Amino acid sequence: MAERSEIECWLTDMDGVLVHENDAIPGASELLAGWEEAGLPYLVLTNNSIFTARDLSARLRASGLHVPEDRIWTSALATADFLAAQVPGGSAFVIGEAGILTALHDAGFIMTETDPDFVVVGETRNYSFEAITKAIRLIDGGARFIVTNPDATGPSAEGPLPATGAIAALITKATGREPYVVGKPNPMMFRSALNKIGAHSKRTGMIGDRMDTDIVAGIEAGLHTVLVLTGISDRAEIEKYPFRPDEVVGSVADLLPEKR
Image (tube, rainbow, N blue to C red):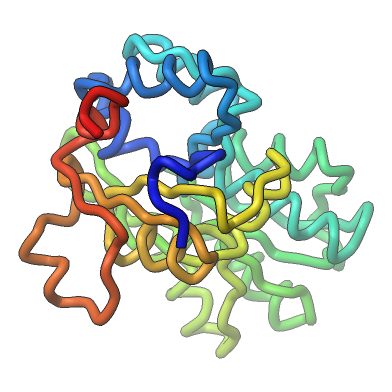
């Protein structure tokens, strides 16, 4: 496994690593600027499939972070990349918003409610009983069941909201069919990100705030893993898992060159 000084490319989670809600985490701007200045390829990864890369780039810019949209890799983009390789020019019935709809459209997919190749469930704040019922019937009819990410809940100002994983569980209960989940912790999302920037796992680092998604997937993809303590997982949680990150740091500020 490469040491941090040997890393030539970086993947990093977004929420809990670079930003909290709409506020940049101290050190994030400097870290990103350092990668740009050094010419290091990098991607910001997120399981969020609601928004397009352009939307997320604008959100980060409002937080004071400059991340071009081509440096953002979402579970929606990874899903579209995977499905386009499986059935080029295929068709899908989609439960989701702009992120997944745009990604599939750009990948050459046709959106249809009639005999689709896939039923794709992504993130949305407007799950409808009608759409879920349609998805169940299409899966029963032979459509393959794909989910952008496994997160059971998502955050909101009012508290947790049911998310993709919760809706997928409902559909699984009704159909008896388990979905194929593309986003983290599936290491496929990392491998597709590596392919996008032409990186090799042995020389790539992954920065994340969750042991159960970022770190385990990074380990399974063969990456140098760094857990930051500004998000979900804390030091006590590390002890619950049989695997360990290569590094544990307080925040991305500890990854700046002068901190080495």
